[in-house]
Length: 238
Ligand SMILES: [Zn+2]
Image (cartoon, rainbow, N blue to C red; front, side, top):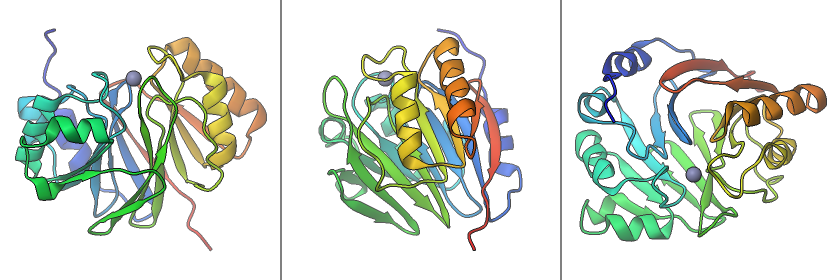
């Protein structure tokens, strides 16, 4: 499908100044995000969204994470391009790792096991097994002093042990396991200051938004359009 390159938007995203208590997010679509703090950047579930000059517009990406091997989350060829251009390491569910073996340096490829925490420079990522058609890993990612949670397109699993300031939560379509209700339950566990609705129809994202506004007054919710960015300011911890 023809799509105009968004390399300029990506360049702007990386060039815009942010403060220590801020997390900048660039939404690629489905469950795909680029997240950056003042000193770190990660890409999560980029599928085949980034191409050519868009990949070359990425700056300082240290880590690429994949929740599972479905095509709306992972594309082996595009991952090779990403790793080649950025030099980033990959943390991924086992099936993704198997598809990347031999296609990228072994020492940059890490298999995520549930409840284990992995360190990449000053980034740490904890994997948590989710529920989906086939295996899926969710991630709690700590970058600088900020904590970000990414729930793939999983159904509900208990997440009370992983409180996070920003939660990227799947609301449904085309996932057989995600729904606005399950995302709401995840938000209730994670107690984030911010939720970003992802992986769902406009209606499902609205349903999550309404539910959060009604029942989790401490949590703000964002609905982002693909290929737009936002900067989230997180409260400084006392
Ligand atoms: Zn999906």
